[in-house]
Image (cartoon, rainbow, N blue to C red):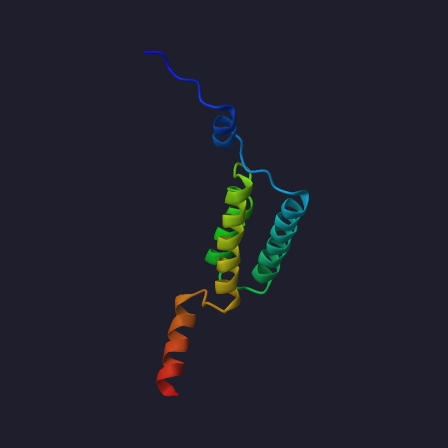
Length: 106
């Protein structure tokens, strides 16, 4: 039995990635740049290094091979990690213990 050719519009819908507007791409690039700068500034003031290291990896190492829709997901995750870091998550066990004892005393 001969294989049937797929209609052109179906073939194109399956093989061509969604096209993004220049405005949408620029917005993604600008937001990434802002997040990278925020990661650097939060590191300078000593915020949670693990969250920031993970955010930086998402915005650099994993960014290169990602599609634009995957990059949007990377941005969302990096934003979440930066928010966690901004909240003042303790960066050592002694800070955790100090907060615990302060709450118990209060």
